Length: 426
Image (cartoon, rainbow, N blue to C red):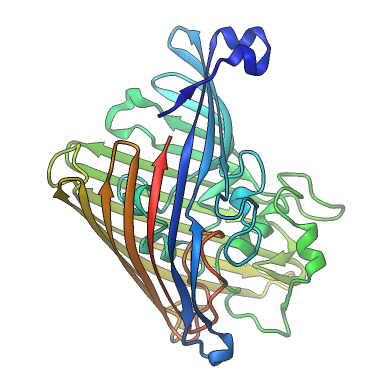
């Protein structure tokens, strides 16, 4: 239950008299086990099974809304990730979790709009992986198979983008509410997104690219070189843009997403130092449809989603390497009655193609199954099991969430996890 705040006492300004301020959020914890074993390089590269008490996406959400009259409103939203397993900003691998580093670390925007359309400015979700077609990971569990596959491999630029302007269809647009078009300015922060999502650059070798040093990473830490604020003699032309068409009418649900990005000339790509003037371009699309087979208010749903993504690396000498892959996802959920839900997910990524040549053993399969017990409108318990099986030449697939995995799986390592947990929305 959201708690209304007395804004005058909190802010001490006359603004509070006409603005509604609410505080809400989510606490999500589980006790379970994670492992990534079977690495191509041998047992020394495996992560043996370990038991954890892990935060699975807790956050605090601050919202401000002011009625401007004539159907117009102004609003602010700040969603900050919190780690209630250790009280810090690091996850189970003792690495930084970018979603818990600061205020509005998950999402933060200010905007103005009416029932027809809204304009929002700031760090925002574009939600390729979740939403009405896939409620399991975003609502009920620590994650889901489709999200794991969508954010591994080549990967699109972002599922949560910074420095963004977004035009959103308002609730008055009916079945198309929530559809949006957006554009963002990445600057040097685009290179950090390349580190955080996607595997190594296709077609490159150690002689061409070397791993980033601790110093270079520190200089490009999240929040350091955002937007157009980049160093001297460094390209500030990085951009990303995309759109989402959402449809929800009766029992039918659908979505189409697409996104493109271009870092501009740089010397830092995908977690590796590149030759000066190298450019990274990405594009991706997804099409999905779902059916709520027991009415619009029922949690019963089946959905299918299919898409494609590609990445092009162009050096200053105009040498081009193109990588492509397809992906497929299936989601199902069934209400067993008496507050019990059963859900399952499956996803697959194809073998990658570099310059139209198939790279063997780069595909991945992921699946998961979960049981949920609803305890109230705000609280539920759950059990889930998830697994990812990837090819021996692939190192880009693991469970999503900087606060969830105990490490980054090595090439060929298959991930498995199970957990019992509790989610409370307040």
